[in-house]
Length: 137
Image 1 (cartoon, rainbow, N blue to C red):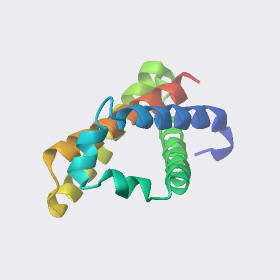
Image 2 (image 1 turned 120 degrees about the vertical axis):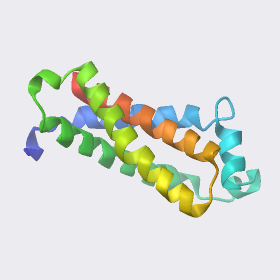
Image 3 (image 1 turned 90 degrees about the vertical axis):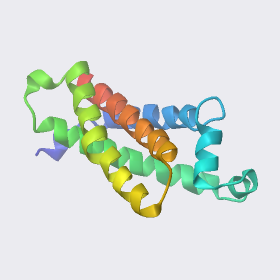
């Protein structure tokens, strides 16, 4: 694994894209209200939180995930380093690692299938987008 050959600009742009996706995914236009209800948060809970800290740390974690995707893709054939190759790697990671891990946690936490579907769907989509961006770059 050659850490120095990672395209950090691609990782950064993929993290920005994933962050933008989250702002739409968890907005009232899509799944925001359903997610909020499924987690048991009120509007006041959200208003009282430190959103700059939450957004900042979220971006850092998404960036680290992007580094992981870049390292994962680095270990594969260069023929797979493309939009579709990256997309398939990202979706693979999203489904087989992230969504299943979320599912196990939510089973033990007694959370709803709806919450799992919203969160896992976001993760699968964001990993697919990040993988595609990193793969094409």
